[in-house]
Length: 302
Image: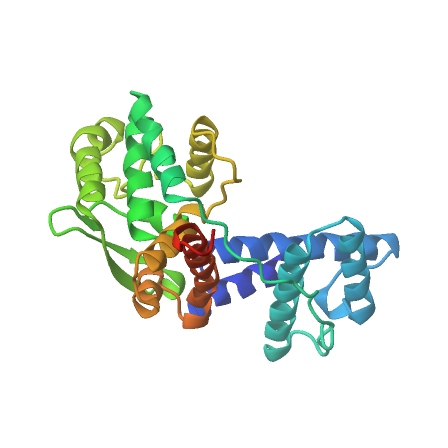
C-alpha cells in the first residue's frame, strides 16, 4: 500500500509539478488513510490492500477523522488527497472501483487573508537588528526580502546564491509548477541581502559547494519551519497583536501594494498567481482601507 502511495506522489511531482509542500501534505494524509485501512483489515483478520478498500471503508475513515475534530479545511484537503489518489489508481487499472465517487469535500468558507499594518511590519523588521548573532543578521535579510518581494516562504528558503541580483535590484524565484518569475526589490532590501552575502553567509557556510542562500547554524539550507519559528519570536518581541502565519508578510505585501495604488494585474504577476481571482481577494481588504481613510478624512464623515 505504501509503495502505491509513493508511486502516486512521484506522479504528482513529475507529471503534475506539485510543490514539495503539497506532496508532503498528501503523503501524511494518505499514510494516515493507509494506517486506518491496515488497522481495520487486521481487526477483521484480513490482509490490507487498496483493492479491498471500498466505499464503506472510505466513509468509516472519514467518520474517524471527523470524530478527531479536524478543522474543515484539513478535512477538505484529506478528502481531496484521497479522491486524487484513487482517481490515479483507477486510471492505472490498479483498482476496479473508486471508493470516493460521489463523496464530497466539506464546505469551507473562504477566509480573507490577515495582513498586518505598515507600522507593525516596520516593528517586525526592526527586531533582528536588536541582536548581534549571525542568525539574526540572516533573519534581517530574509524578512527584508520577504516583505519587499511578496514571495512565498517556500520560495524564499529555496533560493540559491545568485538568485538575488543586489546590483540591479531583483530576485529570481520558482513558484508553483516550477514557474520562474523575476520580482523587483527596493534598494533597502537589496542592500540588506548584499550585506548578508558579503559578511554573514561566509561565516555560516561550512563548505564552499553549498548552493543555498540562507543557511542554518549547521551550514545547511534553512527549513521553512525553522524560519517561521524565528518570525514568531520576533513577532512576540514586537508586541504584534495578530497571529503570525507563514503567509503574513506575503498578504501584507499584496495589501499594501494595492493600497498604495498598484494595479491588480501587476500584483498578480508579482505574487505568481495563475488566476487573477486569487489576487482579487485582496481588493476586499483595500476597500476596507479606503473606507477607513474616507471616514477619517472627510469633514462630514466624522
